[in-house]
Amino acid sequence: MSPSDGVILAAVDVYKNFGSTAALQGASVELARGEVVAVVGPSGSGKSTLLHCLAGIFRPDRGEVWFDGRRIDQLSDDRSAQLRRTAFGFVFQFGQLVPELTAVDNVALPLLLNKVHRGDAYERAGSWFPRLELDGLQRRRTGELSGGQAQRVAIARALVAQPRVIFADEPTGSLDSLTGERVMDLLLDNARAAGTTVVLVTHDARIAAGADRDVTVRDGVATSPARSTAVR
Amino acid sequence: MSVPTALLGLLEPRPSHGYELKREYDALFGEQGRQLSFGQLYGTLARLERDGQIAIDGAEPGEGPERKRYVITPTGVAHLGHWLAEPEQPNPQLQAVLFVKVVLALLSDRPAAQYLDAQRAAHREQMRALTAMRKRGRLTTALLADYGLFHLEADLRWIDVTAERLDQLRAEVVR
Image (cartoon, rainbow over all chains, first blue to last red; front, side):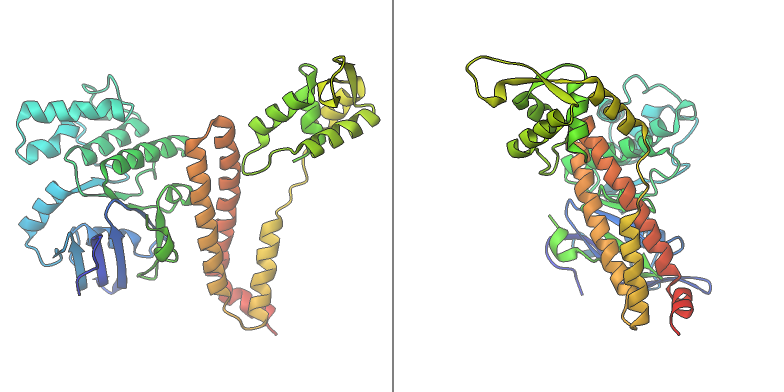
Protein backbone atom coordinates (compact mmCIF):
# COMPACT_ATOMS: atom_id res chain seq x y z
CA MET A 1 0.00 0.00 0.00
CA SER A 2 1.44 3.40 -0.94
CA PRO A 3 2.12 5.91 1.81
CA SER A 4 -0.08 8.94 2.40
CA ASP A 5 0.36 12.40 0.85
CA GLY A 6 3.18 14.53 2.15
CA VAL A 7 5.32 11.47 2.80
CA ILE A 8 8.52 11.50 0.78
CA LEU A 9 10.08 8.30 2.07
CA ALA A 10 8.59 5.23 3.70
CA ALA A 11 9.41 1.70 4.72
CA VAL A 12 6.35 -0.54 4.95
CA ASP A 13 6.64 -3.74 6.99
CA VAL A 14 10.25 -4.32 5.97
CA TYR A 15 12.10 -7.55 6.83
CA LYS A 16 15.82 -8.07 6.34
CA ASN A 17 17.94 -11.05 7.41
CA PHE A 18 21.68 -11.50 7.32
CA GLY A 19 22.17 -15.25 7.36
CA SER A 20 20.35 -16.45 10.43
CA THR A 21 20.29 -12.97 12.01
CA ALA A 22 16.99 -11.13 11.67
CA ALA A 23 18.01 -7.45 11.43
CA LEU A 24 14.57 -6.03 10.59
CA GLN A 25 11.34 -7.78 11.49
CA GLY A 26 8.50 -5.76 10.08
CA ALA A 27 9.86 -2.22 10.40
CA SER A 28 7.62 0.59 9.18
CA VAL A 29 8.41 4.29 9.13
CA GLU A 30 7.21 7.35 7.22
CA LEU A 31 9.08 10.60 6.70
CA ALA A 32 7.39 13.83 5.66
CA ARG A 33 9.01 16.18 3.18
CA GLY A 34 11.61 18.37 4.87
CA GLU A 35 11.38 16.44 8.10
CA VAL A 36 14.45 15.60 10.19
CA VAL A 37 14.00 12.22 11.87
CA ALA A 38 16.46 10.61 14.26
CA VAL A 39 16.53 6.81 14.22
CA VAL A 40 17.60 5.70 17.68
CA GLY A 41 17.87 2.41 19.53
CA PRO A 42 20.35 0.05 21.18
CA SER A 43 23.39 -1.31 19.33
CA GLY A 44 22.40 -4.09 16.97
CA SER A 45 18.73 -3.09 17.02
CA GLY A 46 18.59 -2.68 13.23
CA LYS A 47 18.68 1.10 12.91
CA SER A 48 21.54 1.18 10.36
CA THR A 49 19.92 -1.65 8.41
CA LEU A 50 16.71 0.38 8.28
CA LEU A 51 18.66 3.38 6.92
CA HIS A 52 20.34 1.19 4.30
CA CYS A 53 16.98 -0.24 3.21
CA LEU A 54 15.40 3.23 3.00
CA ALA A 55 18.35 4.41 0.89
CA GLY A 56 18.12 1.46 -1.52
CA ILE A 57 21.55 0.15 -0.50
CA PHE A 58 20.07 -3.03 0.97
CA ARG A 59 17.17 -4.75 -0.73
CA PRO A 60 14.56 -5.89 1.82
CA ASP A 61 13.69 -9.60 1.96
CA ARG A 62 10.05 -8.60 2.38
CA GLY A 63 8.10 -5.38 2.54
CA GLU A 64 8.17 -2.17 0.51
CA VAL A 65 10.22 1.01 0.33
CA TRP A 66 8.66 4.08 -1.22
CA PHE A 67 10.30 7.31 -2.33
CA ASP A 68 8.38 10.24 -3.75
CA GLY A 69 5.34 8.13 -4.63
CA ARG A 70 7.29 5.27 -6.27
CA ARG A 71 8.38 1.89 -4.99
CA ILE A 72 12.15 1.72 -5.02
CA ASP A 73 12.82 -1.67 -3.41
CA GLN A 74 12.43 -3.47 -6.75
CA LEU A 75 14.59 -1.18 -8.89
CA SER A 76 17.49 -2.71 -10.80
CA ASP A 77 20.92 -2.13 -9.29
CA ASP A 78 21.68 0.48 -11.95
CA ARG A 79 18.45 2.41 -11.39
CA SER A 80 18.91 2.21 -7.67
CA ALA A 81 22.48 3.57 -7.95
CA GLN A 82 21.24 6.35 -10.21
CA LEU A 83 18.55 7.29 -7.70
CA ARG A 84 21.15 7.46 -4.93
CA ARG A 85 23.39 9.69 -7.06
CA THR A 86 20.66 12.12 -8.04
CA ALA A 87 18.18 12.21 -5.18
CA PHE A 88 20.05 11.12 -2.06
CA GLY A 89 23.06 12.38 -0.14
CA PHE A 90 25.07 10.38 2.38
CA VAL A 91 27.13 11.18 5.47
CA PHE A 92 28.74 8.27 7.27
CA GLN A 93 30.98 7.99 10.28
CA PHE A 94 34.21 6.99 8.51
CA GLY A 95 35.97 6.59 5.22
CA GLN A 96 33.73 8.43 2.85
CA LEU A 97 36.16 10.97 1.37
CA VAL A 98 38.77 10.12 -1.23
CA PRO A 99 42.05 10.91 0.56
CA GLU A 100 44.09 11.51 -2.59
CA LEU A 101 41.73 14.25 -3.75
CA THR A 102 41.44 17.79 -2.43
CA ALA A 103 38.46 18.87 -0.36
CA VAL A 104 36.85 20.71 -3.26
CA ASP A 105 37.44 17.70 -5.60
CA ASN A 106 35.57 15.54 -3.11
CA VAL A 107 32.67 17.96 -2.90
CA ALA A 108 32.48 18.35 -6.69
CA LEU A 109 32.51 14.57 -7.22
CA PRO A 110 28.74 13.90 -7.07
CA LEU A 111 28.14 16.69 -9.59
CA LEU A 112 30.82 15.39 -11.95
CA LEU A 113 29.30 11.90 -11.70
CA ASN A 114 25.96 13.48 -12.60
CA LYS A 115 27.59 14.96 -15.73
CA VAL A 116 27.48 18.55 -14.54
CA HIS A 117 29.93 20.74 -16.48
CA ARG A 118 33.30 20.83 -14.72
CA GLY A 119 33.45 24.61 -14.23
CA ASP A 120 29.91 24.71 -12.90
CA ALA A 121 30.57 21.72 -10.63
CA TYR A 122 33.61 23.37 -9.03
CA GLU A 123 31.82 26.68 -8.65
CA ARG A 124 28.90 25.03 -6.90
CA ALA A 125 31.24 22.89 -4.78
CA GLY A 126 33.24 25.95 -3.74
CA SER A 127 30.10 27.82 -2.69
CA TRP A 128 29.54 25.29 0.10
CA PHE A 129 32.84 25.95 1.85
CA PRO A 130 31.89 29.25 3.56
CA ARG A 131 28.49 27.84 4.55
CA LEU A 132 30.19 24.97 6.36
CA GLU A 133 32.90 27.15 7.94
CA LEU A 134 35.55 25.64 5.66
CA ASP A 135 36.96 28.83 4.12
CA GLY A 136 40.46 28.42 2.74
CA LEU A 137 40.42 24.61 2.83
CA GLN A 138 39.30 23.92 -0.73
CA ARG A 139 42.75 22.83 -1.94
CA ARG A 140 43.66 20.83 1.16
CA ARG A 141 43.89 17.06 0.72
CA THR A 142 41.26 15.44 2.85
CA GLY A 143 43.86 13.31 4.64
CA GLU A 144 45.24 16.56 6.06
CA LEU A 145 41.95 17.71 7.56
CA SER A 146 40.85 17.35 11.19
CA GLY A 147 37.97 14.98 11.91
CA GLY A 148 35.48 17.85 12.22
CA GLN A 149 36.69 19.48 9.00
CA ALA A 150 36.55 16.19 7.10
CA GLN A 151 33.01 15.60 8.31
CA ARG A 152 31.96 19.07 7.18
CA VAL A 153 33.48 18.36 3.73
CA ALA A 154 31.44 15.14 3.70
CA ILE A 155 28.32 17.19 4.54
CA ALA A 156 29.09 19.62 1.72
CA ARG A 157 29.46 16.64 -0.62
CA ALA A 158 26.14 15.23 0.56
CA LEU A 159 24.36 18.55 0.03
CA VAL A 160 26.00 19.78 -3.17
CA ALA A 161 23.77 17.92 -5.62
CA GLN A 162 20.67 19.29 -3.84
CA PRO A 163 19.40 15.87 -2.79
CA ARG A 164 15.82 15.30 -1.66
CA VAL A 165 16.95 13.15 1.27
CA ILE A 166 20.15 13.03 3.30
CA PHE A 167 21.04 9.77 5.04
CA ALA A 168 23.41 10.29 7.95
CA ASP A 169 24.65 7.20 9.81
CA GLU A 170 26.41 8.13 13.07
CA PRO A 171 27.81 11.29 11.43
CA THR A 172 29.35 12.52 14.68
CA GLY A 173 30.46 9.13 15.99
CA SER A 174 34.16 9.85 15.61
CA LEU A 175 34.06 13.46 16.86
CA ASP A 176 34.32 14.98 20.33
CA SER A 177 31.11 16.32 21.81
CA LEU A 178 31.49 20.04 20.99
CA THR A 179 32.79 19.41 17.45
CA GLY A 180 30.04 16.86 16.89
CA GLU A 181 27.35 19.31 17.94
CA ARG A 182 28.72 22.03 15.65
CA VAL A 183 28.89 19.59 12.73
CA MET A 184 25.30 18.53 13.40
CA ASP A 185 24.10 22.13 13.62
CA LEU A 186 25.68 22.86 10.24
CA LEU A 187 24.22 19.72 8.66
CA LEU A 188 20.71 20.31 9.99
CA ASP A 189 20.66 24.09 9.44
CA ASN A 190 21.71 23.68 5.82
CA ALA A 191 19.37 20.75 5.19
CA ARG A 192 16.44 22.64 6.73
CA ALA A 193 17.24 25.77 4.72
CA ALA A 194 17.13 23.64 1.55
CA GLY A 195 13.96 21.77 2.63
CA THR A 196 15.88 18.48 2.53
CA THR A 197 14.55 15.50 4.46
CA VAL A 198 17.10 13.95 6.82
CA VAL A 199 17.30 10.40 8.17
CA LEU A 200 19.76 10.52 11.05
CA VAL A 201 20.93 7.31 12.71
CA THR A 202 22.61 8.00 16.03
CA HIS A 203 23.18 6.39 19.41
CA ASP A 204 23.77 9.84 20.92
CA ALA A 205 20.66 11.31 22.57
CA ARG A 206 22.03 14.85 22.42
CA ILE A 207 22.56 14.56 18.66
CA ALA A 208 19.13 12.98 18.21
CA ALA A 209 17.59 15.93 20.06
CA GLY A 210 18.40 18.14 17.06
CA ALA A 211 15.81 16.23 15.01
CA ASP A 212 12.10 17.06 14.72
CA ARG A 213 11.20 13.67 16.17
CA ASP A 214 12.69 10.26 16.71
CA VAL A 215 11.91 6.72 15.68
CA THR A 216 13.08 3.97 18.00
CA VAL A 217 14.23 0.68 16.50
CA ARG A 218 14.28 -2.24 18.89
CA ASP A 219 14.67 -5.88 17.89
CA GLY A 220 14.18 -4.94 14.24
CA VAL A 221 10.88 -3.12 14.77
CA ALA A 222 10.45 0.65 14.51
CA THR A 223 8.19 2.63 16.80
CA SER A 224 7.52 6.34 16.77
CA PRO A 225 6.01 7.64 19.99
CA ALA A 226 5.38 11.22 18.95
CA ARG A 227 4.36 10.74 15.32
CA SER A 228 1.04 12.52 15.49
CA THR A 229 2.18 15.69 17.24
CA ALA A 230 5.79 16.26 16.27
CA VAL A 231 5.57 16.49 12.50
CA ARG A 232 5.86 20.11 11.44
CA MET B 1 18.63 28.82 42.41
CA SER B 2 19.59 30.79 45.47
CA VAL B 3 18.24 34.29 44.95
CA PRO B 4 19.92 35.90 48.02
CA THR B 5 23.40 34.70 47.06
CA ALA B 6 22.81 35.60 43.42
CA LEU B 7 22.00 39.16 44.49
CA LEU B 8 25.12 39.25 46.66
CA GLY B 9 27.13 38.10 43.66
CA LEU B 10 25.66 40.83 41.48
CA LEU B 11 26.36 43.47 44.14
CA GLU B 12 29.95 42.47 44.81
CA PRO B 13 31.52 44.11 41.71
CA ARG B 14 29.69 47.39 42.32
CA PRO B 15 26.79 48.88 44.29
CA SER B 16 23.48 48.94 42.47
CA HIS B 17 19.80 49.93 42.61
CA GLY B 18 16.95 47.45 42.91
CA TYR B 19 15.70 47.90 39.38
CA GLU B 20 19.19 47.44 37.93
CA LEU B 21 19.65 44.27 40.02
CA LYS B 22 16.44 42.80 38.70
CA ARG B 23 17.44 43.61 35.12
CA GLU B 24 20.83 41.92 35.52
CA TYR B 25 19.37 38.93 37.36
CA ASP B 26 16.70 38.35 34.71
CA ALA B 27 19.24 38.63 31.88
CA LEU B 28 21.53 36.01 33.43
CA PHE B 29 19.21 33.66 35.30
CA GLY B 30 15.67 34.50 34.23
CA GLU B 31 15.27 31.89 31.48
CA GLN B 32 12.02 29.95 31.21
CA GLY B 33 9.89 32.13 33.45
CA ARG B 34 12.37 32.34 36.31
CA GLN B 35 12.36 36.16 36.32
CA LEU B 36 12.50 37.83 39.68
CA SER B 37 9.34 39.61 40.84
CA PHE B 38 9.75 43.01 42.46
CA GLY B 39 8.17 41.61 45.62
CA GLN B 40 10.75 38.83 45.76
CA LEU B 41 13.54 41.26 44.97
CA TYR B 42 12.75 43.84 47.64
CA GLY B 43 11.83 41.19 50.20
CA THR B 44 15.18 39.50 49.67
CA LEU B 45 17.09 42.81 49.77
CA ALA B 46 15.35 43.68 53.07
CA ARG B 47 16.38 40.34 54.60
CA LEU B 48 19.95 40.69 53.37
CA GLU B 49 20.07 44.16 54.90
CA ARG B 50 18.60 42.90 58.19
CA ASP B 51 21.27 40.15 58.28
CA GLY B 52 24.03 42.68 57.70
CA GLN B 53 25.07 41.22 54.34
CA ILE B 54 24.22 44.35 52.39
CA ALA B 55 23.81 47.99 53.42
CA ILE B 56 22.13 51.01 51.92
CA ASP B 57 24.74 53.20 50.35
CA GLY B 58 22.59 56.31 50.30
CA ALA B 59 19.23 56.94 48.73
CA GLU B 60 18.64 59.52 46.09
CA PRO B 61 16.61 62.33 47.69
CA GLY B 62 12.89 62.55 47.14
CA GLU B 63 12.64 59.14 45.53
CA GLY B 64 10.86 55.92 46.55
CA PRO B 65 12.53 52.79 47.93
CA GLU B 66 13.56 51.63 44.44
CA ARG B 67 16.11 54.41 44.26
CA LYS B 68 18.05 53.09 47.24
CA ARG B 69 21.60 52.14 46.36
CA TYR B 70 22.70 48.80 47.83
CA VAL B 71 26.26 47.79 48.64
CA ILE B 72 27.61 44.42 49.81
CA THR B 73 29.17 44.35 53.32
CA PRO B 74 32.24 42.33 54.43
CA THR B 75 29.79 39.85 56.04
CA GLY B 76 28.03 39.53 52.70
CA VAL B 77 31.31 38.99 50.87
CA ALA B 78 32.28 36.26 53.36
CA HIS B 79 28.88 34.56 53.00
CA LEU B 80 29.08 34.65 49.19
CA GLY B 81 32.64 33.29 49.24
CA HIS B 82 31.61 30.42 51.50
CA TRP B 83 28.58 29.56 49.35
CA LEU B 84 30.59 29.55 46.15
CA ALA B 85 33.36 27.36 47.57
CA GLU B 86 31.03 24.79 49.18
CA PRO B 87 30.18 21.94 46.77
CA GLU B 88 26.47 21.35 46.30
CA GLN B 89 25.02 18.09 47.56
CA PRO B 90 24.90 15.78 44.54
CA ASN B 91 21.23 14.93 44.43
CA PRO B 92 19.94 12.63 41.70
CA GLN B 93 16.29 13.07 42.65
CA LEU B 94 14.67 12.17 39.36
CA GLN B 95 16.41 8.82 39.09
CA ALA B 96 15.18 7.96 42.57
CA VAL B 97 11.56 8.65 41.61
CA LEU B 98 11.95 6.65 38.41
CA PHE B 99 13.53 3.81 40.33
CA VAL B 100 10.60 3.66 42.76
CA LYS B 101 8.14 3.68 39.86
CA VAL B 102 9.92 0.80 38.13
CA VAL B 103 10.06 -1.33 41.29
CA LEU B 104 6.41 -0.64 42.16
CA ALA B 105 5.34 -1.43 38.59
CA LEU B 106 7.14 -4.77 38.76
CA LEU B 107 5.74 -5.58 42.21
CA SER B 108 2.18 -4.93 41.02
CA ASP B 109 2.72 -6.69 37.69
CA ARG B 110 2.13 -3.53 35.71
CA PRO B 111 3.93 -2.87 32.38
CA ALA B 112 7.21 -1.34 33.61
CA ALA B 113 8.75 -1.44 30.12
CA GLN B 114 5.90 0.67 28.74
CA TYR B 115 6.31 3.18 31.55
CA LEU B 116 10.01 3.43 30.76
CA ASP B 117 9.21 3.91 27.06
CA ALA B 118 6.85 6.75 27.95
CA GLN B 119 9.48 8.30 30.20
CA ARG B 120 12.10 7.96 27.46
CA ALA B 121 9.79 9.73 25.00
CA ALA B 122 9.14 12.54 27.50
CA HIS B 123 12.87 12.94 28.10
CA ARG B 124 13.62 13.06 24.39
CA GLU B 125 10.88 15.64 23.83
CA GLN B 126 12.36 17.83 26.56
CA MET B 127 15.83 17.36 25.05
CA ARG B 128 14.51 18.62 21.71
CA ALA B 129 13.08 21.71 23.43
CA LEU B 130 16.37 22.37 25.23
CA THR B 131 18.34 21.85 22.01
CA ALA B 132 16.18 24.47 20.28
CA MET B 133 16.77 26.80 23.25
CA ARG B 134 20.53 26.15 23.09
CA LYS B 135 20.64 27.06 19.42
CA ARG B 136 18.75 30.32 19.60
CA GLY B 137 20.28 31.81 22.71
CA ARG B 138 23.37 33.54 23.96
CA LEU B 139 26.11 31.49 25.60
CA THR B 140 24.50 31.89 29.04
CA THR B 141 21.29 30.39 27.65
CA ALA B 142 23.17 27.71 25.71
CA LEU B 143 25.10 26.58 28.79
CA LEU B 144 21.94 26.51 30.88
CA ALA B 145 20.32 24.33 28.22
CA ASP B 146 23.44 22.12 28.13
CA TYR B 147 23.17 21.62 31.88
CA GLY B 148 19.66 20.27 31.43
CA LEU B 149 20.62 18.22 28.37
CA PHE B 150 23.47 16.42 30.12
CA HIS B 151 21.23 15.55 33.08
CA LEU B 152 18.47 14.27 30.83
CA GLU B 153 21.04 12.26 28.88
CA ALA B 154 22.21 10.63 32.10
CA ASP B 155 18.60 9.76 32.96
CA LEU B 156 18.14 8.29 29.50
CA ARG B 157 21.15 6.03 29.96
CA TRP B 158 19.69 4.85 33.24
CA ILE B 159 16.32 4.24 31.56
CA ASP B 160 17.98 2.22 28.77
CA VAL B 161 20.09 0.13 31.14
CA THR B 162 17.10 -0.52 33.38
CA ALA B 163 14.85 -1.44 30.44
CA GLU B 164 17.43 -4.02 29.38
CA ARG B 165 17.48 -5.57 32.85
CA LEU B 166 13.81 -5.57 33.82
CA ASP B 167 13.55 -9.37 33.86
CA GLN B 168 16.52 -9.62 36.19
CA LEU B 169 15.11 -6.88 38.41
CA ARG B 170 11.69 -8.56 38.48
CA ALA B 171 13.27 -11.79 39.62
CA GLU B 172 15.03 -9.96 42.41
CA VAL B 173 12.15 -7.83 43.79
CA VAL B 174 9.04 -9.96 43.21
CA ARG B 175 8.61 -12.66 45.86
